[in-house]
Amino acid sequence: MQSHAMRAVWPAVLAMAVVLVTARVHAQGFDVTPWPTRQAAPTLQARDLHGQRWDLASLRGKAVLINFWASWCAPCLVEMPSLQALARRHGPEQLVVLAVNFRESAPTAQRFVQRTGLELPVLLDPAGAIARQWKVKVFPTTVLVAADGRVQALVRGELDWTGPQAAALVEPLVRTAPQKTR
Image (cartoon, rainbow, N blue to C red; front, side, top):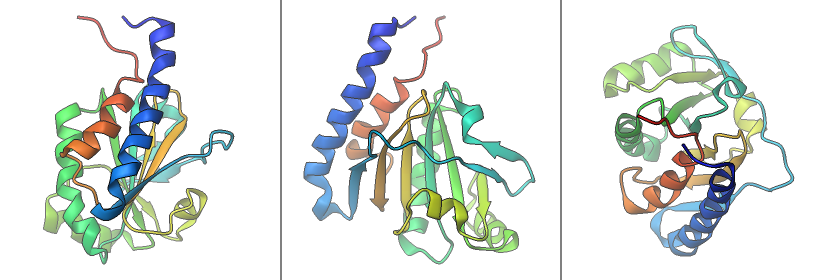
């Protein structure tokens, strides 16, 4: 079981990882931006393709990765398999990966899911309101949320979520969640 002091250290470690990765990513097709520290995280309440309601607040205690995408976005299509692999690797107890579809109908998003075999929860944002709240201007954009509910960073652009740059962001994020003892 982690002590309170150790859990307090992980956000600083994650912040340092964000700084280090940011210094190297500009030429790689993605950009990592820390979330403003005094700015509260927006709410995220949406239904998925199965009608299940999702609320970011209910996921507190778990690390969360929120990916904003659209079926017309070529980099989103390329990135999606690595997001799914990341979710499988960590499992929902360590990391919840949500795919928020931007301004498309449920049938359009469902066709994408069927065509690609996507297994992630796909939340619907048909009016783009959620993306606006989260300041999404580029697709894909991925938001990293620590277990305490604080946004750690935005990743704008395509990233291989199974690669070393992603690991530098995700591993410290996962460690913000309380670890289960065996």
